Image (cartoon, rainbow, N blue to C red):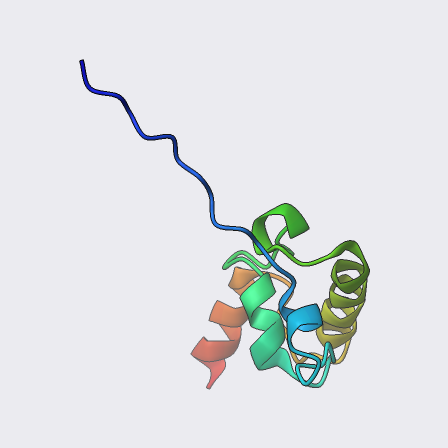
Length: 85
């Protein structure tokens, strides 16, 4: 009888706490896009691995970027925008 190895998930860490030079800022939509699904939803911290403090800041900055039209609210908005160009 063969024994199955138990899957041990990789330890998640906060990218912003690990790298202090990586700012959470609404002016950096390239970084913020990593934390948004293709449908425009903000990804939960249990999936991304960010700490609670950074997740709150991240959520606030994503919402600011959406207000400033640096990020799209939904995937349909991005598709409509690309058709116009």
